[in-house]
Length: 166
Image (cartoon, rainbow, N blue to C red; front, top):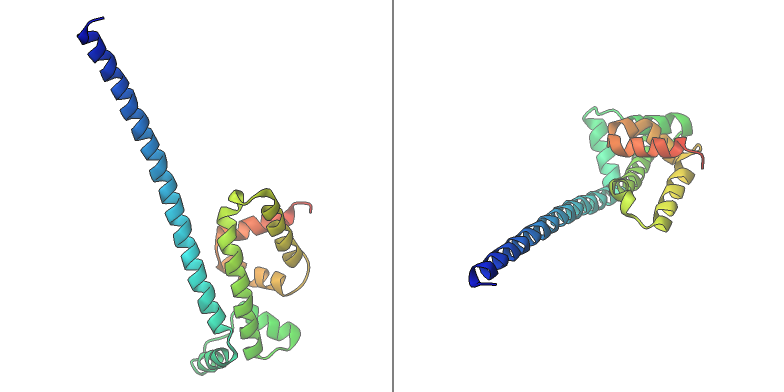
């Protein structure tokens, strides 16, 4: 074998190495984008949860309801249903709304990534959703009155989960 043949073999091997490296980098970039999206979503969710938690503070909730009423804003469908079905005041119904919204936001952070959960965590999550939404109660009322106003993929996931035999 002469030096030209060795050089040709070296070029072929070099080209293969470059191709493998580029493919590896493409996979790493894809994973990096997925991680960045997940981190952004988690950060948004945590921020929203903090804001909803703040809204659940009784002093802030009292002011919120007072301002909303003074500005003529009607209660949302969940608050109206609670007031009509349970006799809660608007302030109490609004406080329950924010608490339920915190739960909804919690679920909303899990549902897009539910397929990545280990099987036991996925089963616990699905069982928890079923337990709180399958029968009558405040979680179900929130889902029925506010679901169509929220994330359609999450609503679809919950509706499909509830439609399957438990």
